[in-house]
Structure formats: C-alpha cells, structure tokens
Image (cartoon, rainbow, N blue to C red; front, side, top):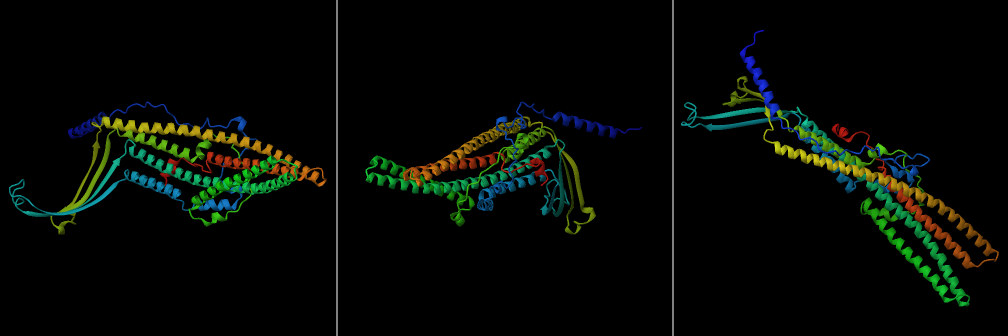
Amino acid sequence: MHTTYPSIFKRSYLMLAISLSLAACVSVPPESSTLRQSDGSAVQLPDDLRQAAECAWPRDDWWQRYDDEQLNRLIEQTLHDNPSLEAATIRVYAAQAALVITRAGDKVSVGVDASTNRQRYSANGLFPAPIGGSTFSDFNVQLDLRKDIDVWGKNRELITAAAGEKAARQAEQAQVRQALALSVAQSYFEFQADGAVMADLQEQIGVQQALVEDKQKRQARGLVSSDEALIEQSKLAELKRRLAEVQAHALGEREALRALVGGNAPSINLLAIRPLPRPREGVPAQLGFELLARRPDLQATHLRVEAAMSRVEAAKAAFYPEINLGASLGLDALSLSDLFQASSRTFLIGPTLSLPIFKRDSLKGQLASVRSGRDELIANYNQQVLDATREVTQTAASIKGLDKQLEQQQAMSTNTAALQRNTKAKLDRGLSDRASLLRADLAVHQDKQVELTLIRQRLQADLRLTRALGGGYHAVSTGTAQAKNT
C-alpha cells in the first residue's frame, strides 16, 4: 500500500502531541492517610441491655404512639412554617442551585453574539489604498459552542460532590424537623408532669393543713408540745414552697411550648392536664448499619465525606491535561443587505489542549487541602458514630433501670395504700386516732410523688431514645445517588 509523505507527517505529529501531553501530566502525590469510615459493624447492643421482645424502630410520626391529640396538634403546628425548618429548607434550595451550576459546567456552552461597527482605516497604516483611507461598516452574528471533554472525570466528580452536599442538607432538614418535634414533646410532658405533681401537692397541702389543725387542738388541750405543732407547720410551709416551685417550672415549660408553636398561640393557655402515658418502647435488637442509616446527623456527615472524596478525585484529575472542543458558526459582511447571504457564512472548529506544566505547586496544595478536609470529616464521622452508640446504650441502660424502679415503687405504693386502708379501718373501730390516718394519707401522696417523678424520667428517657434511634428518619438510598437524580 502506498503511503504519502503528508500522512506520515500527520501521524508523526499526532504521536508527538500525545507524547508531549503525557509528559505534561504532573505526577499525583501518593495518598498518606489511613483513615477509614466506620462501617457500623461495632455498633451493637450489649447482651445485658437486650430485651426479651424485639422493639421496632421509631416511625416518622412517632408522637402518635402516645395517643394524645393535644400533643399531636402542637407538633403539627410547630412543623408548619417554623423559622428553623424554613431556614433548613432554604439551605436545601441553595444546595440544589449549586448542583445546577455544577451540572451546567459539564454541558455544552452555547452563546450568541451580534455586533456592528464602523471603522476608518489609516491611509498610512498596514492596509494600502483602497482600504487605507476609507471607512467601512462590519456586521457580525456568531453562534459559539464550547464543550469540556471530561476525559479524566473531573466534572463528573464535582457533580457527585455537589449532589452529596444537597443530600446532606436534606438530611439536616430532617434533623431539624426531628429536633423540633422532640422539643415540643419534652416540654409538653414536663408540663403535664408538673400538672400531675401540682394536683397531688394541693391534696397533700390539704392533708397537712388538717394535721396542723389536729396538732394545734391537741396542743390547746396540753396533749402535745408546741414543738410538735411547729414541726407540722414547717412541713406545711415546705409543701407550699414546693408547689410554688413546680408552678414556676410549669409556667416556663408552657412558654417554651408557646415559642415552639409560634410565639403567640392562645391555645397554649387552654392546655388540659392529661394522665401521663406509660411508655413501653425499647431498643431494637440489632443496631449496626441500620443505626447509621437512621440517624440524620450521621447521614449528613457521611454524605459530606462522600462529597469530599469526590472533590479529592476532581483535584487529582486536575493534574492531567484538559481538552476542550470549540466551534463558532456565524455570518459576517460589510453590508447589512449581504449579511444573510450564504456567501457571508463563517465557521471555526477545533480542540484546545491545556497542559498543567507550570501549576505543579498549586495543584499539589489544592489536593493536600481537599485531602485534609476529607480526613477531618472522616474523623468527625467516626466520633459521631461512637457518640451515637454511647447515646443509645446509655439511654437503654437508663430505661432498664427506671423500669425496675417503677416496678418496685408500684409495689411500695400498693403496700402503702394497704396500710392506709388498715389505719382507716382501725379509726372506724376506735382503735386509732385521726392523726394516724392523716399521716397514712401523706405516705400515700409521698409514694405518688416518687412514682410521678419516675414516670417523668421514663418519659424523657423514651424521648431521648427516640432521638438516639433517629426519630423515624431512614436513608432509603445513598443520598448522593438520590440527589443526582433530582
């Protein structure tokens, strides 16, 4: 086969260009980090905290399990037009806008330019007569096309990073929603517990007042000393002080609810005191990866780690030559009447090769920076996994202890109530005095106060466990992939 010299030269030039391009590639510094993300395999519940019956993960509307319409309404009002939730939503929109901008950088750039000018050329300049010394008009319309040929995947990695940031913002939005609902439930149950405590304290004050009057009558008859009467009066004052303390705490929780719901919610003043629910929720038998997928804070950090990894890959791709393809199609004429004729058409097409020969130091600095940012995120994520595990296990231990205490306290309350009934029976038969019955009544109320305190603590522990288990959030798919498709 006959080969012409021009084809040989073309082939030689092509091989020379490829060789120069490869030689122009700056070597990528090796990876020195050994940090790895926690995979959740170590996130397990100790055997002594496992329950006989496996418990389910919280649902997205976990507050419905308390069967309290007041609480449901308050949480719904809080999640509607809440400033914190709106701010989180705006951050998601901002991340979506950044993703759109990043995607646009990988698409064909299209621009249209139109210009007209009138110019006189010097008679003593570069162009001789008849151009020199004359004035001409020029009309130009151009369609410009530009495309970055993403050979090394730099644009693809930047898009993945932007998608990961959007998904992280969505996880943070879910976290804000969860935090608001939990704050409402915490303040609501504190308010309800205070209401139950106040009702019992008022009954105690009535019993203690009767005991004071009984002591005063006995003192008047010379049956007891004045010291005994003073002791009972001091106990009455202490109960009243305690009542004032609980009233102040209830007022603070009520105003916290008002601020969460909307700042000026008149319905807060009309909240009825309801019986405190007895939570029975526990910890799922298996945690592991499931916990990582159900905690919005862990997911947000995990997604940012993935985004940082993509930025590292993009920084590594910058060490290689960039290839851009450009084209320009248009019309150019000295007369407007000739502009749209076929003979006025122009075109230009060709590739552009950018070699990072003199950017070695800046590229290495940029790569070191994004690698450091990635490593910091990985370290933070691993610490968050440890903290989340500790939060679950400590709350599970607290719940286990509170359940045992409640069981024993209820047994004590049963015995105290039986003693109170026996004392009343003795009084009816004339075998005991009224003061003994009043003291038995106070013992019943004191047991009830302890039980209310334990129920309050159990409710708050139940809410902490809900938060520790993710509050109903569940990352169904990897956030980066999900965000890339939206």
